[in-house]
Image (tube, rainbow, N blue to C red):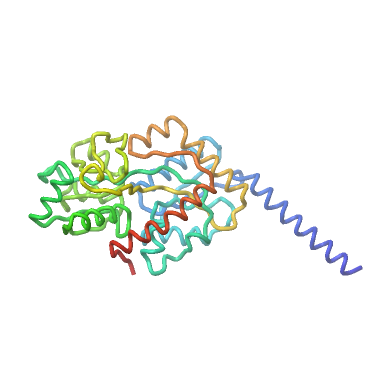
Length: 322
C-alpha cells in the first residue's frame, strides 16, 4: 500500500509540474516584464532592432519589454548571460549573425550554438555596406582596389570576425591587395570613416545609411546578392568584378534551452506580427533591413546552415580571437 501511495503521489506531483509549466506558458508574458538582452551597444544594428521590437511588443501586448545592452567579446557576454537564465521566456537573447560566427572565431565562446539555446525567430537582415570618406578619390570598388595598390589604406569594421570584417577580407584575397583592418564597436565603425580615422568603412547598413544620405560617406558597394532597396543606386560587390557574395548581417531572437515550446511559439508569433506592422516595415526598410515570416523550426535550420558557412569564412580569412 505504501508503495502504491508513493507512486500515486509521484504521478500527482508530475501532473502538477506539467500543469504548472503549461500554465506558465499560457500566461506569458503577463507575469512580469520581458528582458531583451542585446549583445551589442547602443546604436548598433542589433540594438536598433532590439529597441524597436521591445517598444512595439510593449504596445501590442500591454506588457513591458525592456532592453539591457550587454556588449563584449563579440556578443559572447550576452549569450553567456542568457544561457544561464531561467528558461521561461522572460529573458531573450537578441544577437546578430555573430551567434553563428563566434563558435569558430573564439577558442571558447562560452556557449554551444546548437544546444544551449532555442532559436525563436529570425528577425530583419541587412547587407553590409562598404563606404569611403568623400575625400577619397574613388567612386566604385574597382577604383578602390586600384588605389589600394598605390597607397596604404585602412578600413574600419564592426569588429574582428564580424561579417563586415570577413566581407572585406574576401575582397582583399580575391583582388590580391592589402588594406589594414581597424576593428571598432559596431556603432562607431561608420563614424571612423566620417571622421577620417580610416579611409574606408565596412558596416551593416543601419549605422551607415544616415551618413550616406547626409553626404558624409560615399557608398561603394553592398555585399548582398541583390541591390538594397534602401540604396538602389549602389551596386553589389558581384556587379563590380567579383562573384559569390551574399554576405548579410541578420538579427535573431533566442531563449535558453528548456523553454516551453508553447512560449517559444507565442514569442515567435508576436515577433513576426510586429515585423509585419506597416510602420515597422517602413522604419526598418529606410535603414536597409528586410524581413520575412519564419517559424522556430525554420530559424533553427537556418542557424545550422550558417555555422559551417561562417566557419569556412573564418578559416579562409585567418581571423582568430583568443
